[in-house]
Image: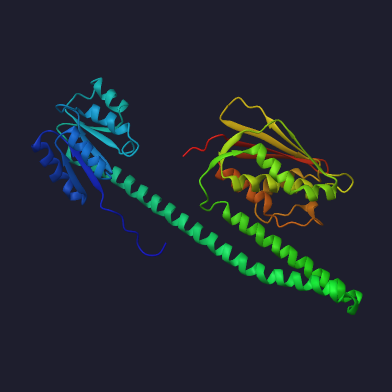
Length: 376
């Protein structure tokens, strides 16, 4: 971020039914350089909280009509005010049982009358510092979201600009091989085939990079997604590759509908199933099984995706979700090393987890868990 970040003036609300107490508090707190708001009753305090964002409330316990405990309970019951820290200011004895009631209703601290000025300022400064850190975190998060959006837009523009000449290269190469192959010797034809293959690899890399970049960008709001339908769609789209490799995908059980980004759920299954097809052993066709796992919690969806492919060495399992990672036994297979990294980011974005077990030469099992509902 460039330049110094400026924040709105910090606001403190003091609530007391006695004017002399409000005056004394205002005089003491004025040295902190904050906006001090005074409320003479619980109802007036509620009105203030609807119009201002307070870093702290200093709340007298004993007030007519609505005492401090009642006001604290009301504030805690509303989304916009439940996070405001409250310090009760009271003349009750520290050993009084009502002190516990104060903590139960949402107090973070107590000040006992007569108030010690140094203790008051010390405690208030702590909460002002916490509020400053909170504002800084909000600003950082906002800047990161803006930066992510800019990067995504940049990636989309760059991918479009890069793919146009690649398509031209692929098209012209194919045209020359089709129309002018007879005018080229074997070496010339092989060179054209290498150009076409390189262009295809570059096109695939650009596509995978864009998919990887878009996972953490702002996307459409989550909605209920039928995972069984998503799997069916992915299998249908992979049908040509399955037939070419004599492969088969079996789905055991009915996966539920979950709250998720539908596009990213498609990416998740497409990457995992496509990997199972691509990285199959040369001596056997790919066999992939998607199986639902029963778990104790009704709030979690759990399933495995198991293949009979080339597998992975145990020493390499920790690095498979790192971008651009290529496994030692995957040489000779086309790939960018971004598929599993994208899967991992999608799982994290949906507050789930993924585990992998594998045996070299025998196959791999991915175990995934996703919440049925996304928590805010």
